Image 1 (cartoon, rainbow, N blue to C red):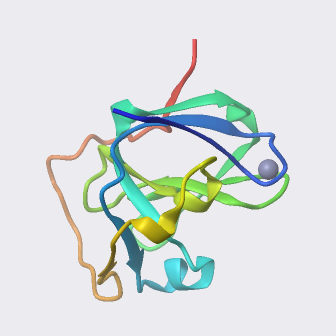
Image 2 (cartoon, rainbow, N blue to C red):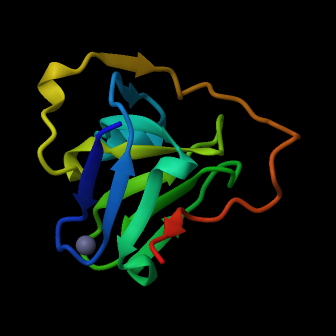
Length: 132
Ligand SMILES: [Zn+2]
């Protein structure tokens, strides 16, 4: 599988993504609309923070299940732990180097009426793994 390098705008946060990117998604929930987010979905095993984990802030709202990470310095959304599939991350594809989103189909997902809940979920969903 291909490996992509990603970073926030100021470069404080860098990460790597090991994933085939076959599909991109948008979402019409109130948060994704304001971010104008274009995302790809990756299993948690495919996302590694290389640098700047301590620079990440997390935003939680609504059910507080999803974890929306962003750089505390430049404010750029990098990735979030998904609510419906909390063992997966949604990744901001505009943070990726050498990735052209124009060649990948985009699917609009419906987040505006998304309801809870996976009762089997872990009680605590941490951030992505750090490079060791
Ligand atoms: Zn930054």
